[in-house]
Image 1: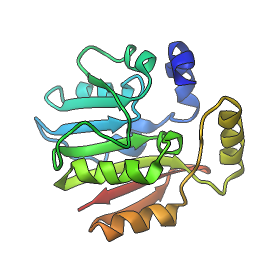
Image 2: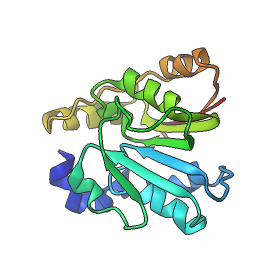
Image 3: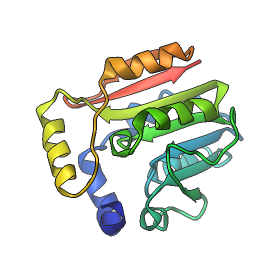
Length: 186
């Protein structure tokens, strides 16, 4: 699906992520040379926004869709890959993001475990997802399944438990009536 919608994706994403900078980036303290990974990051807009704030951040975007990654800015490091087999050494990223993408992963638990593996000991993982109990999410889920996407939404409590068992402190913040952010930090 994403290879097909790549040319218009950035124009559509404002519908679901209108305040991404306010909701996600404003609270973060990034340092020069921090390594940042956006898993399922598509066209790289999140990393591009970070680089505008701090051009010394080392930003990487991993996505399965080559057509999405082709639209990423040239200063973003792009990797075509699978979230369940991240092609990085363990303990190497200061920040890992997964924004409105986890429900597309074929193996969600393995994708989360891979994010944990490549996160530094003092790293932070930020995931934005849709609340599976909300009617808007059910509408999105139906539409994506019609288009051939897996679209399986994780329960917030289940996600929180996975991170806690791995030694993370976890906060959950509802950002609107159907989306929430999980921030997991060791």
